[in-house]
Length: 431
Image (tube, rainbow, N blue to C red; front, side, top):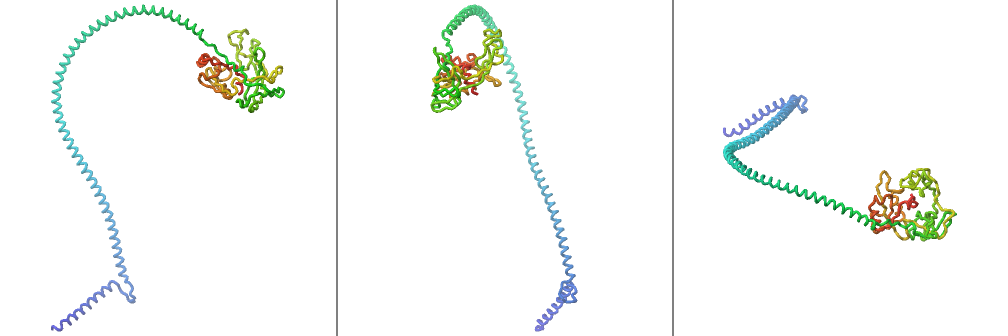
């Protein structure tokens, strides 16, 4: 029997293997289905089961995602509740802290109320004591004040009586002083008038219009040409105007014409004789004709006789020609002069008069504004200053210069020569 054991075991193993193989084959047939052709293709039944399992798996996945989404929603709701719980917890802690603080404050208030009650009692006592002291001091002070007021009233009455007496004495002295002052003032005024009469300085007239700047070295009246012996070396420029005149016996100046430089060379200047038509104003009540077109008033009053009343030159104008007198022509040796110019010298002028200009009109101007006079002066190389000093050569006086311009009086005091605007008309009309 012992020798047949392995054989029995082998037989049993073979039978067991055959049975397991039969069961496996049957299960395989169930899974694969029938394959009558034997081509080894996949069974339709297996595919159906696989598809069914995949569908079940997809359904389980969808359900899983749905449950995950719900889980996230629940988690967010839980987080909101957690945050709310945290806020409530902080609020509760703050409330608890505030409640403790309020409890402390209430306790302190109760203690303070008790202390205040005690202090109020002590203050009332002190107030009564102070009121009693003040009433006593007030009574004493009133008595002292009444005494001082009586003394001051008496002093005031005494002072008033003394002031009345002093006022009477002062009025008497004042009347005496006023009489004496009036006498002294009249004496001083008389002395001042005498002093002014003795010290007042007369206006020194400028003689620049009689001075000589050059002379005529060639005259050709036929061609309206004159040559003078000064040129650019002396400072002459084209456009300069000169008065040509001759000196006659008795130191008498005779006007010949006005010359205007047409071409200036180094030492000579070629000039033309200025010829223009002037309209001279006339007096409607007399035969008076103004010597210059810039004149506005006649020396005769409304009756036609001489007087101090100004008569406007309102009659029709008289036309005349400014030029050379053919009966007294310009000849060689005649002299030329310009009040704004001197050879190799720079004049300094001050224009005296009110320089206020309203609506383009300067009231103190006779015919030309101070701006025009300044422009012409600078054209000839002169300098115009705003303040009078010892460096000023001449004063150009406009209308009412003495009354309107304090610098005019200063210039007269310094002895600076004065030229009046009307003396410069034929040089100022170069516009």
